[in-house]
Length: 493
Image 1 (cartoon, rainbow, N blue to C red):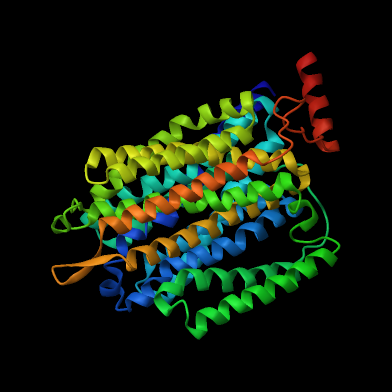
Image 2: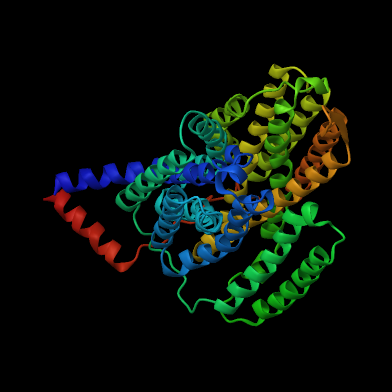
């Protein structure tokens, strides 16, 4: 029995790094397709518009499935739903590796969008399973995996695409996904915290329809035309569908999203700050990648390859990994509200560096790393704020909504940055290229949004960092209590 307990203890110690590995995989899956986008029309025989759905499909499915799978995790078991999300992600990667048909590729990328629920589900498992003194640092690490995976995925994918067949990249991600799934099945225990009831299917369908209309209009508005009947119709449909969904949720006995809880300032303001932070953070990756790859003839571009571009963003990912524990200590000492405000302010500082100088490579890397530092603080504080503000039985769904707000912010940022750059171009070699002024305006816009996020963070009430226990410890179920007594009896014997 001693050996059994030792194996169990070893598995429990591995739970945090295994869950973090799953979060990194999720971010890697979202970014690996980026280096392929310019060549996919030639490789698949599809149009550039069809190829763009390789990104859009993942965005839409991730936004829809994150709150839905979060709610399912609260009701049916977080580990079970986590394994399902990782399995869908892996199956999608295998499908991409086996085909060159753009229709199958888009469907496979939609399956991979399910991985967006990995982070909120993992954070909820950590809350349920870890003692309070370890939860803060583990949640901070889990939150930072989004940036770490994105920073690692781009250069890794670029290297594979440059030196091997593009299907090899998806075989590599399939192997990583299978490893992550196997490790999670072995090391992660099922959480005993549940909120039983009937799943709100009508609410899930209504939210899905509203989000698809919103994100489809935002992501395709630049291509279809912001004043086109298609985009305006999608926005109108979004308003109508979400209004009806709001009424349905208020009346439902077991709603998908507890709107009364979500409307409380301690929950609503972190959600708002998540949207603003997602917007301000995402501009860093978007604009930096385009700026350093711009041709030298522009007078500011560096003409770097996609591999070199990924390496420029790599220091930011390493910084997020190293500083996750620092952000947890700040939250423990001063409260997550302060950590969130500091993070947003540091993001704004990073954009100020970018505005001062975006011609020298070392300054570009420095500014991007400063922004990643702020993102580490902000993203680590957001789930902690949510965990303190919602009941234990709603942590996965509430964190799923918070991640959804970040996703919406990123989609809005992509559209806003594209609109700014399109209106500030000059001809270089006969082709329109964004001007340096356009990039600086994008930096200024993102920095301003970060300052608004800082103000919103400081407005969050009820930070209980110094008043009593930080996180409630879930009560043990009867089988767990019996198991604990059995272990104690064995130890006594």
